[in-house]
Image (cartoon, rainbow, N blue to C red; front, side, top):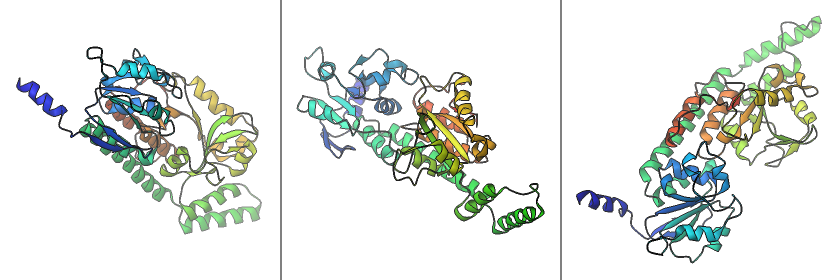
Length: 385
């Protein structure tokens, strides 16, 4: 009896109605403790699982089931549509309590740019729709905190937020330390310039930097030792290569990781460029971002092919990224969403190899929130860092 009373008290500790402003700016009222959850995308499923309430999920979209490596326990749950089209009759059906015939308090989580569920399900008893993205760095901690409050998982939410902030701070500190250690002094730059001029006068190519490398060192001296980075998406031939500019999540990650995104000044978040444009900018690092069909790659063949494809392009051997062996294939799974701090740590280590960071360790810790273990047989970045 005492145990039952304690359980009852713990469930009802939050005062209802509970009013929350979601990330779409909507005022949402939770009238009772949530018993059922329906997630309309994999980012929401990940957040719920991190907060320890995955057992409350009764409905998912196909995008959740495609990530069986993250959600093995959700593979047999009812499907309520795709990530962009939903079965509202099925959602209403799942909310219903078979014993009472009434709806259990049910939470439906959608993206902020997919508000149709809020309209379609409005007025249905005990079904509440909230809009959270869980994939935008600037809102992530706030969204996790609010979801934790809604689900009565405040302690778990605080644990995750503190961990997330700690890992971001670790990247910032390590990057700052590395940039400082890698910085070029005025005397060093002056000596490099004198060495170049002397060698040019004598007609020799030995013992000095080439002109392009000297120009890059001059830039490092002026703006800090941040490698020039090209972030490559889908390439539809050498004249149409997708990249990421200012306003994209990749640009923000690149900047925080201590890189200089060469597409950052193109005036678009998702510009397209030619390979000739890339050659002219001469990046120090190239990252080929890929959405893999599974959890990273099972072997080196596929990522190696992606890297070699870039290296074999016309003129590739003239740019620093290829000369220095800094062309990478990267699994985008860990770049966006709840686990984005893992991708951030990997990028910081790619840009600044001397940084005191351990991406694998960070990923292992994140997976503990998901009750998963690090897959030693999978590859998330190639070549290894």
